[in-house]
Image 1 (cartoon, rainbow, N blue to C red):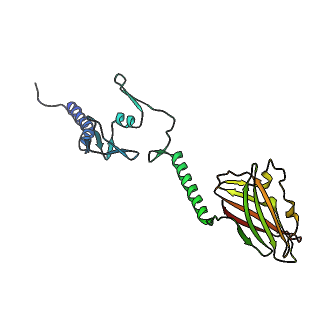
Image 2 (image 1 turned 180 degrees about the vertical axis):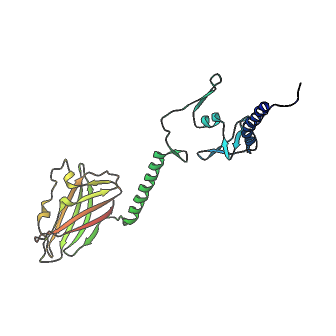
Image 3 (image 1 turned 135 degrees about the vertical axis):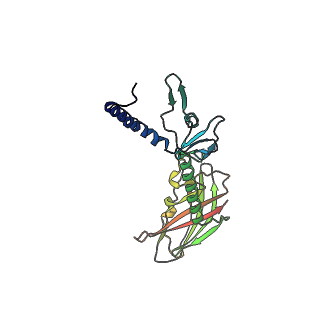
Length: 260
């Protein structure tokens, strides 16, 4: 057998070398690519700020700067159900589609907002209380005066169906007539307010003496009636209003803090 190649055989051999080199080139290029990957279980994982530890046998894959965490571990920590189908090689993750209520410090947002609003209201109430002058309750008789008259509250009597407050008024200016507007009066204790017009059972609810003008040296002793207050009441505030009966109807209010 001759060992010499024919020209035709040489062409076939040359084509085979070129094709082989073409097929080998990608493999060589892939073989020269650097792959950075490793398994670890010392990476901390936090859910809503709470650290969770990987169960035994679980590891995290770190590949090219990314971490790949087991699907079952993450899904179950988020409340989902995980099923692995070996036959189809599919992972099924089931979860409640209803969005969970957002949690702040393990409390629902609504609860946190309500607590914040309550704190604001309490703060505002405290500020309002600090603004209000402190009451100084004192035993009767109590007296006060203004430009037109001198006023004294003498007695508070709790009757069967009503509370009767006795008042004396003496005029201080000759040319200015003054009257007590008894229907503008009120008794207040705690959050309860009683007015003369709230009387339901009273034989004589109005004292007509207060319809007379009081001028200098004039004096009227009368009463103002209110609904019956509890007999164990310790402190109350009486509000009285006086007006000038000269066409101006200029009014002056007075407040008496009474210790019973």
